[in-house]
Length: 440
Image (cartoon, rainbow, N blue to C red; front, side):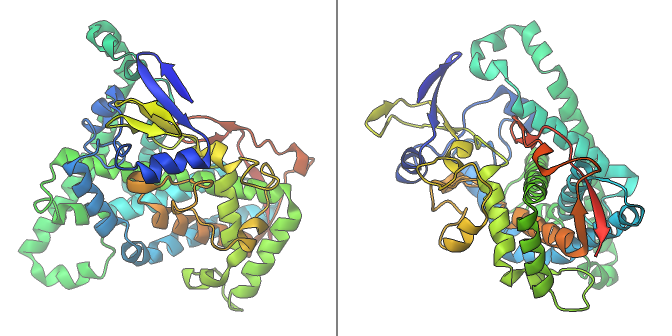
């Protein structure tokens, strides 16, 4: 579907065939991002990875992120932090379970994924000065900003109207100052720590035993990759937003869907409890490998509730033929991942939550090879943080159903659970989730 949005052209892709044409066959043509006044203001004109236009800087930044920050090896090295954060959450739930009190799952899961991202990005002392809560506020600000209608992106000619531009970017500039204050403080702290280590090398052995966070890695590679401080801050902002918000959405939607279908919750609990060694208080990441149904629940949640329903926009760099239609250069391309996941031509009972479908079709995955299922995109611009996000989701979901049984608040029935989503850059549930934990 080719649309005219303001002064821009937009191609909306909602079928697997068209998605494959854009993201595989002609991936090299559609690998860029459209210009955005919002990105210019908040991310230094695409100094990050997610929104940078296709080119040499993007290739270098992407290589840095996938090799040094989000590789399977690096994600595995952060497992201790994930398990520790999950343990803190389970301990925090214990009081509510003893009292039979409801837990605000929206806040709990949002805090968990935020804290996981904060720990990975800025180190194990991220809670100092309430820094984790400040990052949560900044992340929410980004989600709201990118999820809204940016008038200057669709009517770029209005940027010449100075008064209008200042009004449009008043909140954006305030948000940018908040990010700068947070990130500059973290970077300066890491620079000071590195300087102290150079002066006192006898402490290096102790420091090496601590977790190496993303800021450490970026500062070590700053000269090799010609990174400015703005580049580092923009890349870190990507890591915070992508690492926290998408994982939280998957966890909250998974728990809500399981509460709507108690038989599926029982089936998942049986698997997790049977495959976790007896006597363990917590599920560890070593235990997750054989939990096929847990992984199926996560995949089915991604199908029905993709965190980025329209992915991030692509931009055609040349004229291209898609299914017999000429798509001009400089056309925005919007891939409707939500529609792909609910296409009745690809999925039986497309609107039903049925994790079993992913147990029966083991070859189907979310890594960009199956174009009816693209929660993380495909091709050159596919999300590089899949391993990081899924590791957080699996360890938390497994422990929630292992450590506790769950009930709806008094008087609430399964059919009363409102699964309405609120559209934005990411798609969150409209209503908060409250559940009552019970000790096993």
